Image (cartoon, rainbow, N blue to C red; front, side, top):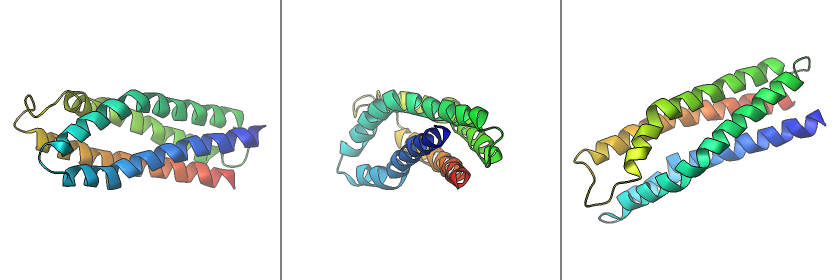
Length: 148
């Protein structure tokens, strides 16, 4: 039973990593290449869509990893799982303190009401997101390593 839970947790975290990787390295490039105001509108729409989903996914991944750490405390790889859970905590704290405030502003912007520095704010979000993706990849790698 624990093995199935470990695999489930790893898959949930892995899919989240894939979504965030795609946002960072694929979707943002596509949106930035769109003509005129389409890119900014796409960023705002993406911020609304993913901003509604990702808090549950991040917290769910963290809870699953913490449960794995507790349930498998005396099993092989427990230290890897605890470290992965710690990295997921870092990603949640980063999100709440650094990325969500920018996203909350961005998701309300239109070409008529966006601030003059909107591109700089989106660039800051993207740079912070790259760091968050690296943290998530490290957490996922640790969970995968704990499986073997």
